[in-house]
Image 1: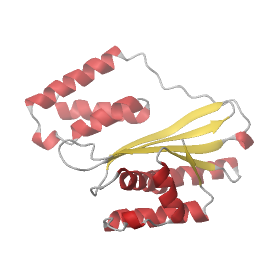
Image 2 (image 1 turned 135 degrees about the vertical axis):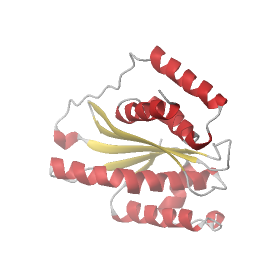
Image 3 (image 1 turned 30 degrees about the vertical axis):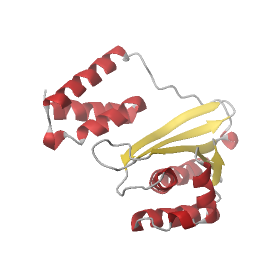
Image 4 (image 1 turned 90 degrees about the vertical axis):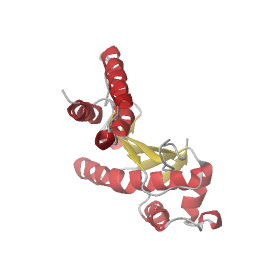
Length: 201
């Protein structure tokens, strides 16, 4: 089979049940138009890893009443993590949580579209993407299913990002590209108006 078809099959599996594979597969898929022998080695290594970890499973459990369930979003970014350019990557993990519940809904890995000049800027862009594009639709659906208001907690590991988003502005980020500035504004409105709880973890 061609490397492209192998990657697409693996991408499908990573999106359904193997979040540990998603980053590697998506990074490889960006090379499909400029494939090299080195990429063949990376695919072989990926397949060997998958073969060695085929017994790994994604476990979910719900042991609580619907009234006890919350939606949690874990979000992170790496600053200029791509070796081929200066772009950062966004990572996210959305989970239904309760005292005896842990049910992963989806996981996110995407390359950011604009270059970030600081960790705070990269984290702000990551939080905006994961919250608005990924988490809001799931939040709306969960509230429709449970027929009640559901608490959404966003777990962020950068205290400067939390401070900037709560204030809606930072003089240190005044240089931000237009796309990132829109991210900051829309995230600030979401936190302020929609009752999203932004917490340090």
